[in-house]
Length: 443
Picture (cartoon, helix red, strand yellow):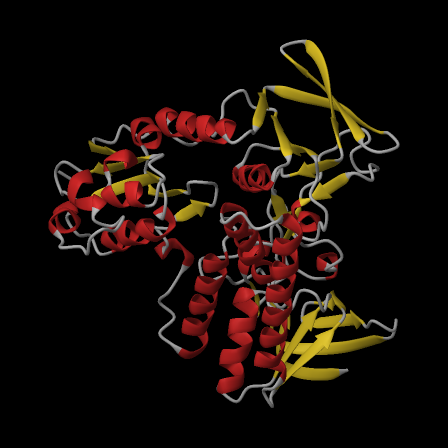
């Protein structure tokens, strides 16, 4: 059994960045990846980048087939770049194969040819990401017309009738995108409340704009069965006691993702998992076994590539810094939903502030009042911000409108730096831009 200084299981964002860093420090690294189609991780292959590429192409009127071909070229280039970023380092070995633990610091790798190799790692970093959740609906798993969010990225033909199970953020991104390409999209969700974590005025605007581009919603829907036909599937469900059914040539299951720990062999170790099936870590990403860490989605929590990157920073600081960085430092984390227009949020919204009995001053601005929105011919949306009336610091913001995915980072930075909202209000911005909206939003 060969002993390796650093073993990283999974070629995702946090792990690959750590591998590159350790190599530059002259340390030996073994990176084990199950699929040669996943070099670089989820984001560049089946999530953030390819999905946003398809969303942008849809908005630009590119045909679905051309958009998919362009997306595939992009991901192939990114995979190759990521592979060589590590494989070309003298002290890094990229090994194709499926790894599982056989002891706390020992892993066995099943190679593509069926052979097995065993390694002992002085340090081991688990970076296996997350996988789609499949609901226990009769006929769902067996249906040949069902796609999960991963498989949807490889779909070569545009579905004519698409049914999406789940009205969460992932489901809405796909609904918005496929509707723009011309699919007839129906979204089914068990909850009667649309985007329940968002403020009512925001969620209703989002719903209306999606309906305006042809997305049909069935909320409070309980799906009872999926039955396959010769050319499509039938989704059986009931709403308020009324039985309904809909035909779909593709059914997209967008009901979330769960930590990918299956077949990792954790039962052969003292590594503990949470009651939600994630690898248990402390504030420094350390598992319950010394010198074994978990990075990214596999540890639970927010599933964003930028969180995985920050996980790398925490481990880097432990190994070669002061050891002061920790998960609990992440008090300001923005997110964006790439529907059209985009929905972005950071900190508290009104609903959350009221639940916490938090005092706030509310600022609102319709996107239609922003000159750049008129120039861009998209005045849909609403900007909202909450400010602490005593400290004048921003408590949170919800930005629903074009380019909100850029603007939210300015809000996030101001919150992180504990700046008064007046700094954004009085800033001199270039014109015409969406950022100058802060002059009016914070009046």
